Image (cartoon, rainbow, N blue to C red; front, side, top):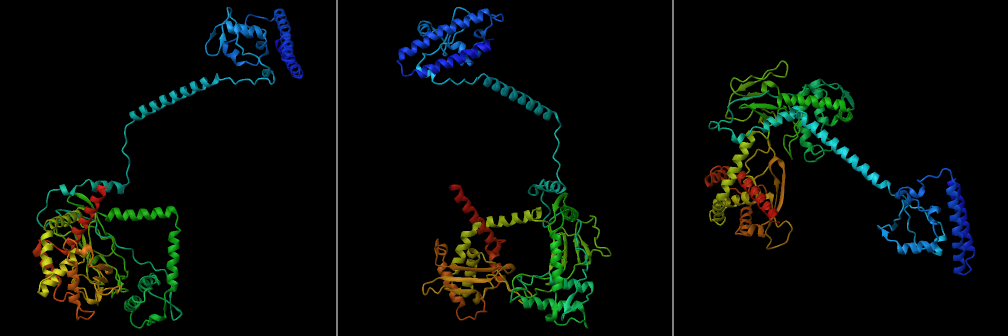
Length: 602
Protein backbone atom coordinates (compact mmCIF):
# COMPACT_ATOMS: atom_id res chain seq x y z
CA UNK A 1 0.00 0.00 0.00
CA UNK A 2 2.75 2.38 0.98
CA UNK A 3 4.76 1.43 -2.13
CA UNK A 4 1.79 2.22 -4.46
CA UNK A 5 1.23 5.59 -2.74
CA UNK A 6 4.89 6.45 -3.13
CA UNK A 7 4.82 5.52 -6.83
CA UNK A 8 1.73 7.68 -7.44
CA UNK A 9 3.30 10.60 -5.61
CA UNK A 10 6.48 10.30 -7.72
CA UNK A 11 4.36 10.35 -10.88
CA UNK A 12 2.53 13.47 -9.71
CA UNK A 13 5.78 15.07 -8.68
CA UNK A 14 7.29 14.45 -12.10
CA UNK A 15 4.09 15.82 -13.70
CA UNK A 16 4.33 18.95 -11.60
CA UNK A 17 8.00 19.37 -12.58
CA UNK A 18 7.11 18.92 -16.25
CA UNK A 19 4.26 21.42 -16.04
CA UNK A 20 6.60 23.82 -14.29
CA UNK A 21 9.14 23.42 -17.05
CA UNK A 22 6.48 23.89 -19.78
CA UNK A 23 5.23 27.16 -18.17
CA UNK A 24 8.75 28.53 -17.92
CA UNK A 25 7.72 31.48 -20.11
CA UNK A 26 5.33 32.78 -17.36
CA UNK A 27 6.45 34.89 -14.46
CA UNK A 28 8.24 33.38 -11.46
CA UNK A 29 5.43 34.39 -9.09
CA UNK A 30 2.81 32.39 -10.99
CA UNK A 31 4.94 29.32 -11.10
CA UNK A 32 5.61 29.46 -7.37
CA UNK A 33 1.93 29.90 -6.62
CA UNK A 34 0.94 26.87 -8.66
CA UNK A 35 3.62 24.76 -7.04
CA UNK A 36 2.74 25.70 -3.43
CA UNK A 37 -0.91 25.18 -4.10
CA UNK A 38 -0.26 21.61 -5.14
CA UNK A 39 1.64 20.70 -1.97
CA UNK A 40 -1.23 20.93 0.64
CA UNK A 41 -3.35 18.68 -1.50
CA UNK A 42 -0.72 16.00 -1.58
CA UNK A 43 -0.11 16.19 2.18
CA UNK A 44 -3.84 15.97 2.98
CA UNK A 45 -4.21 12.92 0.79
CA UNK A 46 -1.21 11.20 2.35
CA UNK A 47 -2.37 11.83 5.94
CA UNK A 48 -5.79 10.42 5.22
CA UNK A 49 -4.31 7.34 3.60
CA UNK A 50 -1.95 6.62 6.48
CA UNK A 51 -4.64 7.05 9.16
CA UNK A 52 -7.00 4.66 7.47
CA UNK A 53 -4.42 1.95 6.86
CA UNK A 54 -4.91 -1.11 9.12
CA UNK A 55 -1.11 -1.89 9.02
CA UNK A 56 -0.12 1.46 10.49
CA UNK A 57 2.04 1.22 13.63
CA UNK A 58 4.13 3.62 15.68
CA UNK A 59 7.37 2.54 13.96
CA UNK A 60 6.88 4.23 10.62
CA UNK A 61 9.62 5.20 8.26
CA UNK A 62 9.95 8.55 10.02
CA UNK A 63 10.84 6.72 13.24
CA UNK A 64 13.67 4.65 11.80
CA UNK A 65 17.25 5.13 12.84
CA UNK A 66 19.03 8.32 12.04
CA UNK A 67 21.50 6.66 9.68
CA UNK A 68 18.71 5.14 7.59
CA UNK A 69 16.88 8.44 7.47
CA UNK A 70 19.96 10.31 6.32
CA UNK A 71 20.86 7.70 3.74
CA UNK A 72 17.38 7.73 2.10
CA UNK A 73 17.50 11.32 0.85
CA UNK A 74 15.54 10.84 -2.38
CA UNK A 75 12.24 9.84 -0.65
CA UNK A 76 9.26 11.97 -1.70
CA UNK A 77 7.64 11.47 1.74
CA UNK A 78 10.27 13.67 3.37
CA UNK A 79 10.55 16.28 0.65
CA UNK A 80 6.93 17.46 0.98
CA UNK A 81 6.09 17.27 4.71
CA UNK A 82 5.35 21.03 4.97
CA UNK A 83 5.09 24.05 2.62
CA UNK A 84 8.38 25.60 1.65
CA UNK A 85 7.60 28.90 3.36
CA UNK A 86 6.84 27.12 6.64
CA UNK A 87 10.06 25.13 6.42
CA UNK A 88 12.04 28.28 5.81
CA UNK A 89 10.54 30.06 8.81
CA UNK A 90 11.07 27.01 10.99
CA UNK A 91 14.71 26.83 10.01
CA UNK A 92 15.31 30.42 11.06
CA UNK A 93 13.63 29.95 14.45
CA UNK A 94 14.78 26.45 15.52
CA UNK A 95 18.28 25.88 16.89
CA UNK A 96 20.52 23.47 14.91
CA UNK A 97 22.02 20.39 16.46
CA UNK A 98 25.47 19.34 15.24
CA UNK A 99 27.28 19.85 11.98
CA UNK A 100 24.64 18.15 9.81
CA UNK A 101 22.00 20.78 10.63
CA UNK A 102 19.42 18.38 12.06
CA UNK A 103 16.46 19.85 14.01
CA UNK A 104 15.23 18.41 17.28
CA UNK A 105 11.46 18.07 17.79
CA UNK A 106 9.40 17.50 20.93
CA UNK A 107 8.39 14.00 19.84
CA UNK A 108 10.35 11.04 18.69
CA UNK A 109 10.20 12.26 15.13
CA UNK A 110 13.47 13.55 13.64
CA UNK A 111 13.10 15.99 10.79
CA UNK A 112 15.92 16.70 8.38
CA UNK A 113 16.49 20.35 7.64
CA UNK A 114 16.00 21.14 3.98
CA UNK A 115 17.82 23.91 2.10
CA UNK A 116 15.87 26.66 0.33
CA UNK A 117 14.22 25.43 -2.85
CA UNK A 118 15.10 27.17 -6.11
CA UNK A 119 14.01 26.69 -9.67
CA UNK A 120 17.13 24.76 -10.51
CA UNK A 121 16.40 22.13 -7.89
CA UNK A 122 13.66 20.59 -10.06
CA UNK A 123 15.47 20.50 -13.38
CA UNK A 124 16.93 17.07 -12.64
CA UNK A 125 16.22 14.45 -10.02
CA UNK A 126 19.03 14.29 -7.42
CA UNK A 127 21.25 11.19 -7.46
CA UNK A 128 21.21 9.02 -4.35
CA UNK A 129 24.29 9.25 -2.16
CA UNK A 130 26.25 6.10 -1.37
CA UNK A 131 26.17 4.80 2.15
CA UNK A 132 29.48 4.99 4.01
CA UNK A 133 28.50 2.90 6.95
CA UNK A 134 30.37 -0.18 5.50
CA UNK A 135 33.83 1.45 5.67
CA UNK A 136 34.21 1.32 9.46
CA UNK A 137 33.14 -2.30 9.40
CA UNK A 138 35.90 -3.14 6.90
CA UNK A 139 38.51 -1.35 8.99
CA UNK A 140 37.33 -3.21 12.05
CA UNK A 141 37.52 -6.49 10.17
CA UNK A 142 41.08 -5.67 8.97
CA UNK A 143 42.20 -4.85 12.50
CA UNK A 144 40.72 -8.11 13.75
CA UNK A 145 42.60 -10.09 11.10
CA UNK A 146 45.84 -8.28 11.91
CA UNK A 147 45.44 -9.06 15.60
CA UNK A 148 44.74 -12.72 14.86
CA UNK A 149 47.83 -12.94 12.61
CA UNK A 150 49.97 -11.28 15.29
CA UNK A 151 48.74 -13.77 17.87
CA UNK A 152 49.43 -16.66 15.51
CA UNK A 153 52.96 -15.32 14.82
CA UNK A 154 53.69 -14.93 18.53
CA UNK A 155 52.46 -18.45 19.13
CA UNK A 156 54.69 -19.77 16.35
CA UNK A 157 57.72 -17.97 17.83
CA UNK A 158 57.01 -19.49 21.24
CA UNK A 159 56.72 -22.95 19.71
CA UNK A 160 60.02 -22.49 17.85
CA UNK A 161 61.68 -21.33 21.06
CA UNK A 162 60.53 -24.45 22.84
CA UNK A 163 62.02 -26.71 20.16
CA UNK A 164 65.60 -27.89 20.84
CA UNK A 165 68.23 -26.15 18.68
CA UNK A 166 69.90 -28.40 16.11
CA UNK A 167 73.38 -27.89 14.67
CA UNK A 168 73.45 -27.31 10.92
CA UNK A 169 74.79 -30.39 9.17
CA UNK A 170 77.98 -29.79 7.16
CA UNK A 171 79.47 -31.84 4.37
CA UNK A 172 82.61 -33.80 5.03
CA UNK A 173 84.85 -31.33 3.23
CA UNK A 174 83.44 -28.40 5.22
CA UNK A 175 83.94 -30.26 8.49
CA UNK A 176 87.57 -30.99 7.63
CA UNK A 177 88.14 -27.37 6.61
CA UNK A 178 86.69 -26.14 9.90
CA UNK A 179 88.93 -28.57 11.80
CA UNK A 180 92.04 -27.22 10.02
CA UNK A 181 91.07 -23.59 10.69
CA UNK A 182 90.73 -24.35 14.39
CA UNK A 183 94.49 -24.85 14.65
CA UNK A 184 96.37 -21.58 15.31
CA UNK A 185 99.91 -22.44 14.28
CA UNK A 186 101.37 -19.14 15.51
CA UNK A 187 100.28 -20.02 19.04
CA UNK A 188 101.72 -23.53 18.94
CA UNK A 189 104.82 -24.22 21.10
CA UNK A 190 108.11 -23.83 19.22
CA UNK A 191 109.87 -26.90 17.85
CA UNK A 192 113.50 -27.88 18.22
CA UNK A 193 116.00 -25.89 16.16
CA UNK A 194 115.92 -26.98 12.54
CA UNK A 195 112.89 -29.28 12.96
CA UNK A 196 109.75 -28.72 10.91
CA UNK A 197 107.58 -31.24 12.73
CA UNK A 198 107.62 -33.82 15.51
CA UNK A 199 105.12 -36.37 14.14
CA UNK A 200 103.75 -36.66 10.62
CA UNK A 201 101.53 -39.23 8.96
CA UNK A 202 99.91 -39.28 5.50
CA UNK A 203 98.45 -41.68 2.91
CA UNK A 204 101.12 -41.40 0.22
CA UNK A 205 100.63 -40.48 -3.45
CA UNK A 206 97.67 -41.12 -5.76
CA UNK A 207 98.76 -42.59 -9.11
CA UNK A 208 96.92 -42.17 -12.44
CA UNK A 209 95.08 -45.10 -13.98
CA UNK A 210 96.80 -47.39 -16.40
CA UNK A 211 96.37 -46.62 -20.09
CA UNK A 212 93.17 -47.96 -21.65
CA UNK A 213 93.70 -48.63 -25.41
CA UNK A 214 91.06 -47.16 -27.74
CA UNK A 215 92.03 -49.20 -30.85
CA UNK A 216 91.98 -46.25 -33.28
CA UNK A 217 94.82 -46.61 -35.81
CA UNK A 218 97.07 -43.82 -37.02
CA UNK A 219 98.08 -43.60 -40.68
CA UNK A 220 101.54 -43.93 -42.10
CA UNK A 221 102.02 -43.09 -45.74
CA UNK A 222 98.22 -43.20 -46.08
CA UNK A 223 97.86 -46.71 -44.61
CA UNK A 224 96.56 -47.65 -41.14
CA UNK A 225 99.19 -48.97 -38.73
CA UNK A 226 98.53 -51.37 -35.88
CA UNK A 227 100.28 -50.29 -32.68
CA UNK A 228 100.88 -51.95 -29.36
CA UNK A 229 99.15 -50.38 -26.32
CA UNK A 230 102.39 -48.68 -25.16
CA UNK A 231 103.01 -47.38 -28.73
CA UNK A 232 99.41 -46.27 -29.14
CA UNK A 233 99.66 -44.36 -25.84
CA UNK A 234 102.63 -42.30 -27.10
CA UNK A 235 100.88 -41.61 -30.42
CA UNK A 236 97.84 -40.44 -28.47
CA UNK A 237 100.04 -38.03 -26.48
CA UNK A 238 101.04 -36.25 -29.70
CA UNK A 239 97.51 -36.30 -31.11
CA UNK A 240 96.29 -34.53 -27.95
CA UNK A 241 98.52 -31.50 -28.71
CA UNK A 242 96.65 -28.70 -30.48
CA UNK A 243 98.13 -28.38 -34.00
CA UNK A 244 97.40 -24.64 -33.96
CA UNK A 245 98.49 -24.09 -30.35
CA UNK A 246 101.50 -22.38 -28.84
CA UNK A 247 103.82 -25.35 -29.51
CA UNK A 248 102.90 -26.82 -32.89
CA UNK A 249 101.36 -23.59 -34.17
CA UNK A 250 104.53 -21.56 -33.56
CA UNK A 251 107.12 -21.64 -36.34
CA UNK A 252 109.96 -21.38 -33.85
CA UNK A 253 108.82 -24.02 -31.38
CA UNK A 254 107.16 -26.52 -33.74
CA UNK A 255 110.43 -27.96 -35.20
CA UNK A 256 111.87 -28.39 -31.68
CA UNK A 257 108.72 -30.08 -30.41
CA UNK A 258 108.40 -32.47 -33.38
CA UNK A 259 112.08 -33.42 -33.34
CA UNK A 260 112.12 -34.27 -29.63
CA UNK A 261 108.84 -36.19 -29.80
CA UNK A 262 109.74 -38.30 -32.79
CA UNK A 263 113.09 -39.28 -31.29
CA UNK A 264 111.33 -40.64 -28.17
CA UNK A 265 108.55 -42.18 -30.29
CA UNK A 266 111.06 -44.14 -32.37
CA UNK A 267 112.71 -45.36 -29.16
CA UNK A 268 109.36 -46.80 -28.03
CA UNK A 269 108.65 -48.33 -31.46
CA UNK A 270 112.05 -50.06 -31.55
CA UNK A 271 114.24 -51.02 -34.46
CA UNK A 272 112.80 -52.39 -37.65
CA UNK A 273 109.37 -50.68 -37.21
CA UNK A 274 107.56 -49.50 -40.31
CA UNK A 275 107.31 -45.91 -39.00
CA UNK A 276 110.58 -44.14 -39.87
CA UNK A 277 109.70 -40.70 -41.24
CA UNK A 278 107.60 -38.19 -39.29
CA UNK A 279 106.38 -36.45 -42.46
CA UNK A 280 104.52 -39.63 -43.46
CA UNK A 281 102.76 -39.89 -40.08
CA UNK A 282 99.11 -38.89 -39.86
CA UNK A 283 97.65 -38.66 -36.33
CA UNK A 284 94.33 -37.32 -37.63
CA UNK A 285 92.15 -40.39 -36.89
CA UNK A 286 93.33 -40.46 -33.25
CA UNK A 287 92.88 -36.69 -32.94
CA UNK A 288 89.30 -36.98 -34.26
CA UNK A 289 88.60 -39.74 -31.74
CA UNK A 290 89.88 -37.57 -28.88
CA UNK A 291 87.69 -34.66 -30.00
CA UNK A 292 84.67 -36.97 -30.04
CA UNK A 293 85.49 -38.13 -26.52
CA UNK A 294 85.62 -34.51 -25.38
CA UNK A 295 82.13 -33.94 -26.76
CA UNK A 296 80.88 -37.09 -25.05
CA UNK A 297 82.28 -35.91 -21.72
CA UNK A 298 80.57 -32.56 -22.11
CA UNK A 299 77.24 -34.24 -22.83
CA UNK A 300 77.16 -36.49 -19.77
CA UNK A 301 74.09 -36.46 -17.57
CA UNK A 302 73.86 -34.77 -14.20
CA UNK A 303 73.87 -38.16 -12.53
CA UNK A 304 77.13 -39.15 -14.26
CA UNK A 305 78.65 -35.78 -13.40
CA UNK A 306 77.68 -36.34 -9.79
CA UNK A 307 79.31 -39.77 -9.81
CA UNK A 308 82.54 -38.31 -11.21
CA UNK A 309 82.54 -35.67 -8.49
CA UNK A 310 82.04 -38.37 -5.86
CA UNK A 311 85.05 -40.30 -7.18
CA UNK A 312 87.24 -37.17 -7.08
CA UNK A 313 86.13 -36.40 -3.54
CA UNK A 314 86.85 -39.95 -2.48
CA UNK A 315 90.43 -39.63 -3.74
CA UNK A 316 90.79 -36.23 -2.07
CA UNK A 317 89.55 -37.48 1.30
CA UNK A 318 91.98 -40.39 1.14
CA UNK A 319 95.18 -38.65 -0.04
CA UNK A 320 94.49 -34.92 0.43
CA UNK A 321 95.13 -34.64 4.18
CA UNK A 322 98.01 -35.27 6.54
CA UNK A 323 98.26 -35.45 10.32
CA UNK A 324 101.10 -33.21 11.53
CA UNK A 325 101.84 -32.91 15.26
CA UNK A 326 98.32 -34.02 16.08
CA UNK A 327 96.47 -31.53 13.85
CA UNK A 328 95.03 -31.84 10.33
CA UNK A 329 96.83 -30.25 7.34
CA UNK A 330 95.83 -30.14 3.68
CA UNK A 331 98.17 -31.71 1.12
CA UNK A 332 98.90 -29.73 -2.03
CA UNK A 333 99.86 -31.99 -4.97
CA UNK A 334 98.84 -35.49 -3.92
CA UNK A 335 98.16 -36.64 -7.51
CA UNK A 336 101.17 -37.99 -9.36
CA UNK A 337 101.69 -36.19 -12.67
CA UNK A 338 100.51 -38.43 -15.54
CA UNK A 339 102.76 -39.31 -18.50
CA UNK A 340 102.63 -37.21 -21.65
CA UNK A 341 104.64 -34.86 -23.84
CA UNK A 342 106.71 -32.21 -22.08
CA UNK A 343 105.38 -28.77 -23.01
CA UNK A 344 107.62 -26.34 -21.16
CA UNK A 345 107.43 -22.55 -21.40
CA UNK A 346 108.80 -20.36 -24.12
CA UNK A 347 111.37 -21.92 -26.43
CA UNK A 348 112.38 -24.69 -24.08
CA UNK A 349 114.96 -26.95 -25.77
CA UNK A 350 113.35 -30.13 -24.43
CA UNK A 351 109.73 -29.48 -25.36
CA UNK A 352 108.05 -32.47 -26.99
CA UNK A 353 110.05 -35.09 -25.11
CA UNK A 354 108.16 -37.95 -23.50
CA UNK A 355 107.42 -37.70 -19.79
CA UNK A 356 107.55 -41.24 -18.54
CA UNK A 357 105.11 -42.79 -16.09
CA UNK A 358 106.34 -42.66 -12.48
CA UNK A 359 106.03 -45.95 -10.62
CA UNK A 360 105.83 -46.37 -6.81
CA UNK A 361 109.35 -47.82 -6.78
CA UNK A 362 110.67 -44.36 -7.75
CA UNK A 363 108.88 -42.64 -4.84
CA UNK A 364 110.43 -41.95 -1.45
CA UNK A 365 108.05 -41.28 1.43
CA UNK A 366 108.86 -39.13 4.46
CA UNK A 367 106.99 -39.54 7.75
CA UNK A 368 107.62 -39.85 11.47
CA UNK A 369 109.27 -42.94 12.85
CA UNK A 370 106.65 -45.43 14.05
CA UNK A 371 103.89 -44.03 11.82
CA UNK A 372 101.90 -46.50 9.74
CA UNK A 373 103.34 -46.79 6.23
CA UNK A 374 100.49 -46.30 3.72
CA UNK A 375 99.42 -49.15 1.49
CA UNK A 376 100.76 -48.90 -2.08
CA UNK A 377 97.71 -48.29 -4.34
CA UNK A 378 99.26 -49.84 -7.49
CA UNK A 379 98.93 -53.65 -7.51
CA UNK A 380 102.21 -55.53 -7.75
CA UNK A 381 104.32 -52.50 -6.76
CA UNK A 382 105.81 -51.12 -3.55
CA UNK A 383 107.25 -47.84 -2.31
CA UNK A 384 110.88 -47.25 -3.16
CA UNK A 385 111.93 -45.95 0.27
CA UNK A 386 110.55 -44.62 3.55
CA UNK A 387 112.53 -41.97 5.46
CA UNK A 388 112.03 -40.16 8.79
CA UNK A 389 113.57 -36.68 8.45
CA UNK A 390 111.85 -33.95 10.53
CA UNK A 391 114.16 -31.25 9.14
CA UNK A 392 112.45 -31.23 5.73
CA UNK A 393 108.87 -30.29 4.85
CA UNK A 394 108.19 -32.62 1.93
CA UNK A 395 106.00 -35.72 2.27
CA UNK A 396 107.14 -37.60 -0.86
CA UNK A 397 109.99 -37.21 -3.35
CA UNK A 398 110.86 -38.58 -6.81
CA UNK A 399 112.89 -37.62 -9.90
CA UNK A 400 111.42 -36.71 -13.25
CA UNK A 401 113.13 -37.91 -16.42
CA UNK A 402 113.14 -34.69 -18.49
CA UNK A 403 115.60 -32.57 -16.49
CA UNK A 404 116.44 -35.23 -13.88
CA UNK A 405 115.20 -32.87 -11.16
CA UNK A 406 113.64 -33.69 -7.81
CA UNK A 407 109.89 -33.34 -7.49
CA UNK A 408 108.12 -33.08 -4.14
CA UNK A 409 104.71 -33.64 -2.65
CA UNK A 410 104.21 -30.94 0.00
CA UNK A 411 101.48 -29.40 2.10
CA UNK A 412 99.10 -26.87 0.58
CA UNK A 413 99.60 -23.09 0.53
CA UNK A 414 97.24 -22.59 3.52
CA UNK A 415 99.21 -24.99 5.71
CA UNK A 416 101.23 -24.04 8.79
CA UNK A 417 104.48 -24.76 6.92
CA UNK A 418 103.68 -22.11 4.30
CA UNK A 419 102.49 -19.70 7.00
CA UNK A 420 105.79 -19.98 8.87
CA UNK A 421 107.73 -19.48 5.63
CA UNK A 422 105.74 -16.34 4.80
CA UNK A 423 106.21 -15.00 8.32
CA UNK A 424 109.97 -15.42 7.96
CA UNK A 425 109.95 -13.72 4.55
CA UNK A 426 108.02 -10.68 5.75
CA UNK A 427 110.12 -10.48 8.91
CA UNK A 428 113.21 -10.07 6.72
CA UNK A 429 111.43 -7.39 4.71
CA UNK A 430 110.57 -5.58 7.95
CA UNK A 431 114.24 -5.69 9.01
CA UNK A 432 115.24 -4.35 5.58
CA UNK A 433 112.92 -1.39 6.18
CA UNK A 434 115.18 -0.31 9.03
CA UNK A 435 118.36 -0.72 6.95
CA UNK A 436 117.21 0.40 3.52
CA UNK A 437 118.60 3.94 3.79
CA UNK A 438 122.07 2.71 4.70
CA UNK A 439 122.02 0.07 1.94
CA UNK A 440 120.95 2.58 -0.71
CA UNK A 441 123.54 5.07 0.43
CA UNK A 442 126.21 2.36 0.13
CA UNK A 443 125.41 1.27 -3.44
CA UNK A 444 124.93 4.87 -4.62
CA UNK A 445 128.50 5.59 -3.68
CA UNK A 446 129.62 2.62 -5.77
CA UNK A 447 127.80 3.98 -8.84
CA UNK A 448 130.55 6.60 -9.29
CA UNK A 449 133.46 4.42 -8.20
CA UNK A 450 136.55 4.38 -10.40
CA UNK A 451 136.80 0.64 -9.82
CA UNK A 452 134.85 -1.19 -12.55
CA UNK A 453 133.97 -4.10 -10.26
CA UNK A 454 132.48 -1.81 -7.62
CA UNK A 455 130.65 0.25 -10.25
CA UNK A 456 129.06 -2.90 -11.73
CA UNK A 457 128.16 -4.12 -8.24
CA UNK A 458 126.52 -0.79 -7.36
CA UNK A 459 124.64 -0.71 -10.67
CA UNK A 460 123.37 -4.28 -10.16
CA UNK A 461 122.19 -3.39 -6.65
CA UNK A 462 120.31 -0.37 -8.08
CA UNK A 463 118.63 -2.57 -10.72
CA UNK A 464 117.57 -5.18 -8.13
CA UNK A 465 116.19 -2.50 -5.81
CA UNK A 466 114.46 -0.17 -8.31
CA UNK A 467 113.54 -2.53 -11.18
CA UNK A 468 112.84 -5.67 -9.06
CA UNK A 469 114.94 -7.98 -11.23
CA UNK A 470 116.14 -11.36 -10.01
CA UNK A 471 119.83 -12.08 -9.57
CA UNK A 472 119.97 -14.54 -12.47
CA UNK A 473 122.64 -17.15 -13.08
CA UNK A 474 124.48 -19.19 -15.62
CA UNK A 475 122.39 -21.75 -17.48
CA UNK A 476 123.01 -24.50 -19.97
CA UNK A 477 120.77 -23.47 -22.84
CA UNK A 478 120.92 -27.00 -24.24
CA UNK A 479 119.20 -28.32 -21.12
CA UNK A 480 117.17 -25.33 -19.89
CA UNK A 481 115.28 -22.37 -21.33
CA UNK A 482 117.30 -19.21 -21.89
CA UNK A 483 115.91 -17.23 -18.97
CA UNK A 484 117.71 -14.10 -17.82
CA UNK A 485 118.30 -12.18 -14.57
CA UNK A 486 120.33 -9.17 -13.58
CA UNK A 487 123.78 -10.80 -13.69
CA UNK A 488 123.05 -12.63 -16.95
CA UNK A 489 121.84 -9.62 -18.96
CA UNK A 490 123.40 -9.46 -22.41
CA UNK A 491 123.93 -6.47 -24.66
CA UNK A 492 121.20 -7.71 -27.00
CA UNK A 493 118.65 -7.31 -24.19
CA UNK A 494 119.19 -3.53 -23.96
CA UNK A 495 117.96 -1.13 -26.66
CA UNK A 496 119.13 2.47 -26.19
CA UNK A 497 116.84 5.25 -27.40
CA UNK A 498 114.22 2.79 -28.78
CA UNK A 499 112.11 5.58 -30.32
CA UNK A 500 115.10 7.34 -32.02
CA UNK A 501 114.49 10.64 -30.28
CA UNK A 502 118.12 11.70 -30.61
CA UNK A 503 120.67 13.19 -28.23
CA UNK A 504 119.64 13.76 -24.65
CA UNK A 505 117.33 10.75 -24.57
CA UNK A 506 117.84 8.59 -21.48
CA UNK A 507 115.55 5.67 -22.34
CA UNK A 508 116.49 1.98 -22.48
CA UNK A 509 114.15 -0.81 -23.55
CA UNK A 510 114.78 -4.03 -21.62
CA UNK A 511 113.51 -7.19 -23.35
CA UNK A 512 114.29 -10.72 -22.22
CA UNK A 513 112.72 -13.92 -20.89
CA UNK A 514 112.51 -14.01 -17.11
CA UNK A 515 111.60 -16.82 -14.75
CA UNK A 516 109.34 -19.52 -16.27
CA UNK A 517 110.07 -17.95 -19.70
CA UNK A 518 107.86 -14.95 -18.94
CA UNK A 519 108.62 -12.03 -21.25
CA UNK A 520 109.98 -8.89 -19.58
CA UNK A 521 109.64 -5.94 -21.95
CA UNK A 522 109.73 -2.46 -20.45
CA UNK A 523 111.05 0.94 -21.50
CA UNK A 524 112.85 2.69 -18.64
CA UNK A 525 113.27 6.48 -18.74
CA UNK A 526 116.25 6.99 -16.45
CA UNK A 527 115.82 10.76 -16.67
CA UNK A 528 112.28 10.79 -15.27
CA UNK A 529 111.38 12.09 -11.82
CA UNK A 530 110.69 8.50 -10.71
CA UNK A 531 114.39 7.59 -11.01
CA UNK A 532 116.08 10.95 -10.46
CA UNK A 533 113.98 12.39 -7.61
CA UNK A 534 115.24 12.13 -4.03
CA UNK A 535 118.79 11.54 -5.32
CA UNK A 536 117.68 8.48 -7.30
CA UNK A 537 120.72 8.81 -9.59
CA UNK A 538 118.90 7.48 -12.65
CA UNK A 539 121.11 9.51 -15.00
CA UNK A 540 124.26 7.97 -13.52
CA UNK A 541 122.85 4.44 -13.95
CA UNK A 542 122.09 5.19 -17.63
CA UNK A 543 125.66 6.39 -18.14
CA UNK A 544 126.99 3.21 -16.50
CA UNK A 545 124.92 0.98 -18.79
CA UNK A 546 126.18 2.95 -21.76
CA UNK A 547 129.72 2.40 -20.59
CA UNK A 548 129.27 -1.34 -19.81
CA UNK A 549 127.82 -2.05 -23.29
CA UNK A 550 130.40 -0.09 -25.25
CA UNK A 551 132.61 -2.13 -27.60
CA UNK A 552 130.77 -5.39 -26.85
CA UNK A 553 129.02 -7.84 -29.14
CA UNK A 554 125.26 -8.49 -28.69
CA UNK A 555 125.88 -11.87 -27.02
CA UNK A 556 128.33 -10.57 -24.42
CA UNK A 557 127.17 -9.98 -20.85
CA UNK A 558 126.63 -6.45 -19.56
CA UNK A 559 128.01 -7.23 -16.08
CA UNK A 560 131.08 -9.14 -17.25
CA UNK A 561 132.95 -8.83 -13.93
CA UNK A 562 129.99 -9.70 -11.69
CA UNK A 563 128.70 -13.19 -10.89
CA UNK A 564 125.63 -14.29 -8.91
CA UNK A 565 127.91 -15.67 -6.20
CA UNK A 566 129.64 -12.29 -5.71
CA UNK A 567 126.32 -10.44 -5.68
CA UNK A 568 124.65 -12.81 -3.19
CA UNK A 569 127.69 -12.70 -0.94
CA UNK A 570 127.57 -8.91 -0.92
CA UNK A 571 123.86 -8.96 -0.05
CA UNK A 572 124.54 -11.20 2.96
CA UNK A 573 127.29 -8.84 4.13
CA UNK A 574 124.93 -5.88 3.96
CA UNK A 575 122.24 -7.62 6.05
CA UNK A 576 121.92 -11.17 7.34
CA UNK A 577 119.51 -13.17 5.23
CA UNK A 578 119.19 -10.45 2.55
CA UNK A 579 118.47 -11.66 -0.99
CA UNK A 580 117.08 -10.09 -4.14
CA UNK A 581 113.72 -11.62 -3.23
CA UNK A 582 113.67 -9.66 0.04
CA UNK A 583 114.08 -6.44 -1.97
CA UNK A 584 111.04 -7.36 -4.08
CA UNK A 585 109.00 -8.25 -0.98
CA UNK A 586 109.92 -4.97 0.73
CA UNK A 587 109.19 -2.76 -2.29
CA UNK A 588 105.87 -4.48 -3.00
CA UNK A 589 104.77 -4.21 0.64
CA UNK A 590 105.86 -0.55 0.81
CA UNK A 591 103.92 0.28 -2.36
CA UNK A 592 100.77 -1.40 -1.05
CA UNK A 593 101.09 0.42 2.28
CA UNK A 594 101.46 3.81 0.57
CA UNK A 595 98.43 3.22 -1.64
CA UNK A 596 96.29 2.17 1.33
CA UNK A 597 97.26 5.35 3.15
CA UNK A 598 96.16 7.40 0.14
CA UNK A 599 92.77 5.69 0.20
CA UNK A 600 92.36 6.30 3.93
CA UNK A 601 92.92 10.06 3.47
CA UNK A 602 90.13 10.38 0.89
